[in-house]
Amino acid sequence: MKQRSIGTIQVSAIGLGGMPMSIEGRPDTDRSVRTVHAALDAGVTLIDTADAYHLHADEVGHNESLIAQALAGWGGDTSDVLVATKGGHLRPGDGSWTIDGSPAHLREAVEGSLKRLGVDAIGLYQFHRPDPKVPYADSVGTLRELLDAGKIRMAGISNATVEQIRQAQEILGGRLVSVQNQYSPAFRSSAEELRLCDELGIAFLPWSPLGGITKAGELGTRFAAFGEVAQAHGVSPQQVTLAWMLARSPHIIPIPGASRPESITDSAQASELTLTDAELRELDAA
Ligand SMILES: NC(=O)c1ccc[n+]([C@@H]2O[C@H](COP(=O)([O-])OP(=O)(O)OC[C@H]3O[C@@H](n4cnc5c(N)ncnc54)[C@H](OP(=O)(O)O)[C@@H]3O)[C@@H](O)[C@H]2O)c1
Image (tube, rainbow, N blue to C red; front, side, top):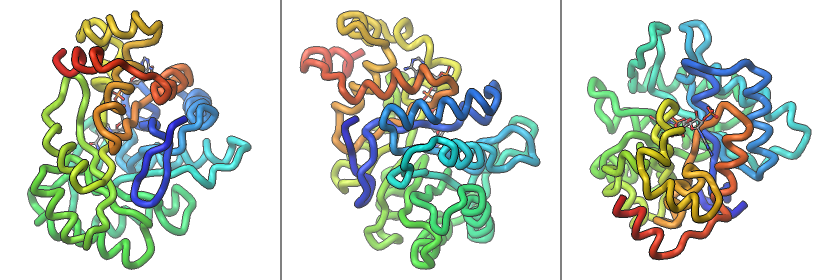
């Protein structure tokens, strides 16, 4: 597996997104654990989660607990695995996603994540989504506080605009290491934020890189060019999509979600798939 950087840490070029294992349509725990183990077997050393990846109101952090359980039960050395979690979103249990970016909530949320992940400090903590009711500087200022207190080792933001990335970088005194925004063949409007990450030399983690849980399977038909290139290489359109992203920038680290071992095993192979310049141009234009 090729490696990329988040801050000073090296991680696999393809990460694992944990969300499908904990929200609507999630599998049983056994299949989820096997999925995480398949990722680790394939050399994945970045796992993205959030305290809000759960279904019912009384199971906040379902996904964090699941990942901690799977890591503990793998049997190999997991000391080089970076678990990246997030705070600032909530799920009251009625299917909705709400937001609380207040310093008080973030401070409390971090304590919960630390406990569930069973660590003294969180490897990468990301502010999940700007809260219109709270000044952005207050939310990101809390990340700075958590960094200074040693509760989190690295800080990232998610769903951020170009202005917010610049603001966060300033508030954190140059310690912003990652931006996680939506980016896929269907959703390319984060190109500006990606360009800024390249300029600043920080990691860009595309979320829903395959178009999201319900659309990922249709990639090759919704975007025919991805299907055609996949056929030419004898691989899946999902692998082609991830390889295309990797080729676009050395700072991109896709985090495809999975709820089946086969999905992440296949996605992980994108790290070794090389597309020609002509193919990349075709996919850019698709
Ligand atoms: N920051 C944010 O606001 C935000 C928002 C959304 C998501 N995220 C993060 O981003 C991650 C990825 O996004 P996502 O899970 O929404 O969508 P996604 O990665 O675009 O799609 C996930 C789905 O793709 C399928 N899949 C994965 N690899 C495949 C392959 N090689 N071949 C065929 N199907 C494949 C999986 O199917 P199976 O389930 O059958 O394995 C999975 O359900 C999430 O898990 C989460 O960690 C963050």
